[in-house]
Image (cartoon, rainbow, N blue to C red; front, top):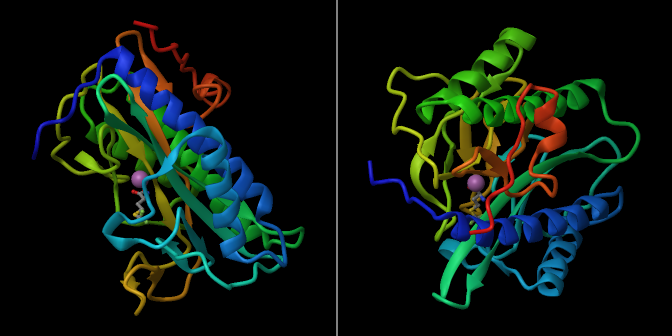
Length: 280
Ligand code: MF3
Ligand code: CO
């Protein structure tokens, strides 16, 4: 596999700017995800916040992708395209978005990428609430593992172990799509799997950054891509869910770039203390 990009703390600070902008834009898209809104409304809210805060979408135009976020509803796993679909009370929707900022000194792009799941309205079935909660917790367990891991594959071990300990075989973990390295591009080496494999992949070193993004389903993990060439759905029509954060490993520890508090509140529950990225 290609070598993993190593960032200086100063470069990780640029990524933090991109991450915080991504997080605020997701706040706006999440707030817009109410019954009666279209998925295009969510895209507008996200794009407007990027404009306001000086970020540029890294989704828009990516292999000709036509929007700034992916909106994946119910049996859609990832890469749903915002459009005229009207959100209904009871829907589960994952909203995935990102942004880059440009370092004026070098003209380089620094990227952020994050996803959250929203339970729409007040009558969401318990099964969907649980699916989102387990997926979210699986993400945080994967991030927590990164704090002490020696190799990238330990993230997937932790995600899978958590899901199995918590719920046995109730949920499938998607294998067709995985997380990734992130930095001067949105998608970089290495792959970050959400399940255990024997080859644990590259050694983790300070200066690496990863997008961790578990996707869980209530049925079979078989997926297919719809005729729009983007939307990935479960073949059996079962519900799907995704949560994602971009996380930096720096000289002092880890920092969740796409969480305003660096992940402190969630990770402290798991016994991990995040460390601010040193200024220089
Ligand atoms: N951000 C997605 C991921 O989490 C990829 C989106 S591809 C795009 O890796 F074309 F929709 F932007
Ligand atoms: Co990603």
